[in-house]
Length: 146
Ligand SMILES: [Zn+2]
Ligand SMILES: [Zn+2]
Image (cartoon, rainbow, N blue to C red; front, top):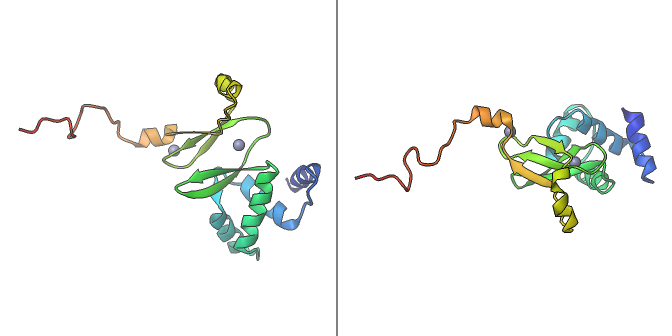
């Protein structure tokens, strides 16, 4: 809700400007991370006259405030609203879907001063739509052809 977004911004000492609330509201409706260009195009198509540069600037501010998390996706940056608290992200290489996990099992890493933010893999939906790949089957460098 807008009120909540405004509160979140103000609690971080930031002004709850219309642009920030607009971008936050849009991202709350998204299940998957969206790039700045996608956010810009969608807002424009809904009649919001916001410039791409403003979208980039607003996103950078929201990321710095830890309200939005940024992900690398096929060489571009995509953005997503996350829950509060420390978590890391399971990012699907196939569809870009993001799942938040509280990774208590990764404590040894943080003890070593290493912060894990993203773990890349393939989500269950993508695994189901892919044919199973087994090592040793099918043509490949290891097959004996004559
Ligand atoms: Zn996150
Ligand atoms: Zn996937």
